[in-house]
Image (tube, rainbow, N blue to C red; front, side):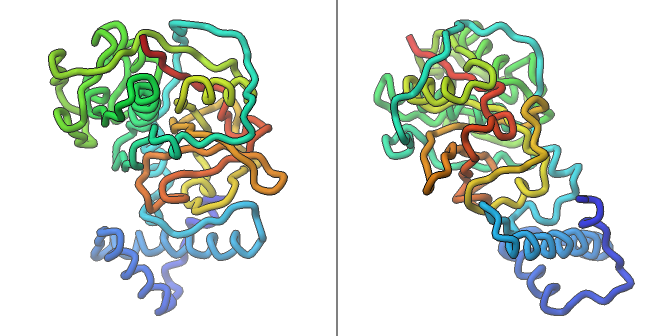
Length: 316
């Protein structure tokens, strides 16, 4: 279906008002194209605009809109999805639990930093891990640090930097190789490219000692661990056109996989709208995407595998 939307017949004249909208979009997103590239990107953009109009006319539980990703090809979009899988044993295994809270939002407690943009780098795994680390450190030591994603991109040898990684490898690196500490972003700023490791132990901070895996597929346990420990790193299937251009509402995608996960995000809480329960998650594609960088995902169906591979780090 996506291929159909991305097929453009260039012999048909572009509608003038749509082309003007595209030019305005280029200015707003600071993306500029000329020549053949301009027409190529315009074609992609127009096909997505038509999908947006059709989807929003259906009365779905969520809306979609044009954003800074709207001139990307599918392969370019997929390069942002950097979650990779491997068998790794957790440092700690716990039994399933159940949350007692009806709703929770760690943003309201000051445990979450502002939304960031990973850029054209498949480093979602690093952002997801540090979202968890920052929240857990704050809740236990009362200071919200901004840790360095770039340090993980450059230094976690078992991962592949901008070509993807695994939260478990990052946790093990932090705990085993860095004495449970992480450098701050101000000392090791984000560059969105792979580089040489420049970790300096004397500049690292933190009190991390182990990590645990949420019981696979158990959303009750996911809620309980989020309530008990703080923000959680979760994997999900995000290779869907509807997710790329999601702009608000409670997301659900009937063809979303519960097993084949390709993107890492951060869980900050949960709630209910009317009779519909949902998760609150933070993405790393900037504030123009979704609900100011966040999205709500329907709860109770393990939608997109939200509880399939969720992890949390623990402090000393």
